Image 1 (cartoon, rainbow, N blue to C red):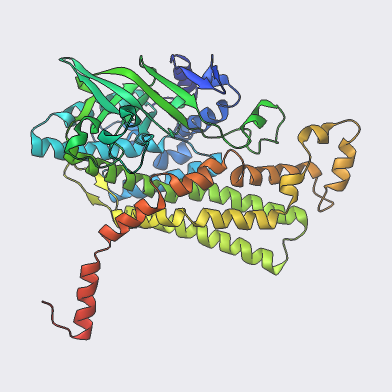
Image 2: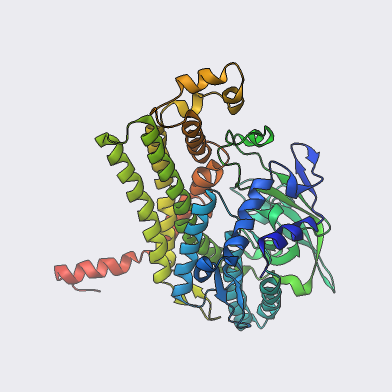
Length: 482
């Protein structure tokens, strides 16, 4: 396994082409806007080195018998599925941000079982190719970006019917030695902190969309791949220096548009090419795993937000108020409900044909449906308790100013025994999670990540087995079944 230092050094060796605010970035690793997101990924390596977290952060490879980072592991039991969620909560607690490796972990587990079943039915050799990639991923402890979401263009049209064919990733040429890819993937979490990209189709495809039913892996710095870094709320605060106006100066997340400009992929790295009938299976399984993930990572960040809110109440002198206590209880209740769903869909998982364990898809979708709502209420309560000063207080530079600094300290002190700076720091952290850069992961991603709320409701409808429930009711009411 890689150490945290080795991971950082490995990124420095990549030749990534990244655009940020209209400029080509010379050094992504040390860029002040990007660096906090790299630190979050780095934490997944650092915690794996720590003996006290070994049980959660590492696993034994079923391929080699060696210890590997859990983010490179295929789930071999319901215990693995449960530990995944617990690991994600831990990392959310340690970073209060998106740590970005979940998409790759969820992608390898989905691709593994889908390629196995594809080979069984069609006689292809995709699973063998994928297993070779996975062995290398485990050996090198790669961070892999799972890339599913296409720009999509006109949502009312299938991929093959779009005015611009590049709005969905597709095969433009098949050669004896491989394929050529064109298109883009949007909202790519952690792509610039990744070693490899694992691409999957974004929706179930029909026969006319066969060229879009493609899955493959490519080095993150492969020729023809470039990135346009996405904006986040309050992101330029990271350029100001200081120690707390950014809210979370250590950690963060990022998203980017990943463009494939006629990228060549050798056949050994291709895991689906035209088998449109399996595209839906791959999408459904990846989405299920990723919806499970949110029952861990969002809960960990929620733990930090709840703690920060309780501190804000302490610093405001309001902690003993009955309504404040009740609101904190409600925040904990909502957060633990999300966690319970993540654990439940894991404990109810089952083995697939490849041997990899899949979560209970119904409960995973229920988990994510709750995630589209509960973090918003937790954030609302945090803002309620924190008070308006969270968004109107002066900057750190004002606090440090030789003339007005004492004025800031005087008028923005809460409880006399608590330094004004401590109060300002905790309010900036709450602001970061609810409104700032971390709100991308905690709020909007909670809504749209791993599919929109409606996507989960469709799956709940499919998986809910309404006809069986009707039969249960008939049996109790003594109504004969037809």
